[in-house]
Image (tube, rainbow, N blue to C red; front, side, top):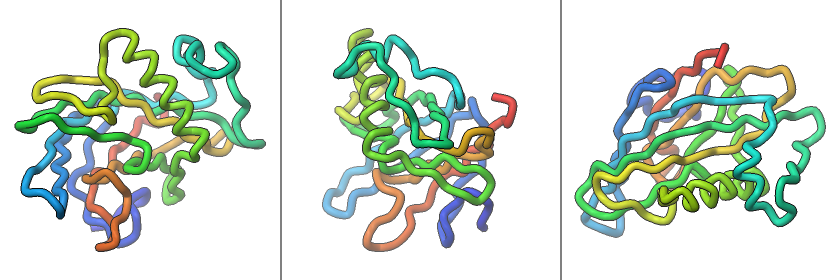
Length: 183
């Protein structure tokens, strides 16, 4: 079952809407354990300034680096809860794309550095970054920063059921989150 926004050949495990939780089960080939998370894509904001509270943690506090020419920043805000049996980590950096119809945008290295500023801000608020590991029953915000063309509206987000979009075994299955174009 394919759909615009899902990587070619990927198994779509579900099509939740923004605000609807879904369960990621990450199976590592080199361990016997599974990491299990409940993830909710809360909202996507495009074309707005980045959060000044996050930018306060930048090398030049409060200065928003410009996006690539002709592009706008989109910030995907998620909540991640560890529903497994042990400490586990997960990050949007290499496991999420933001899509405009069938065009998938991955975060660049500089986009991931901006997402890290959000993690630092939330860490100051007592919320552990899920990429650093969270305990069972703990919730944490996670953010992805993407650049898409100015004027485009994202239609879906692809969330792989692993720590990477692809492995040597192929494309990871995942969830095709349906976004409200007005959000």
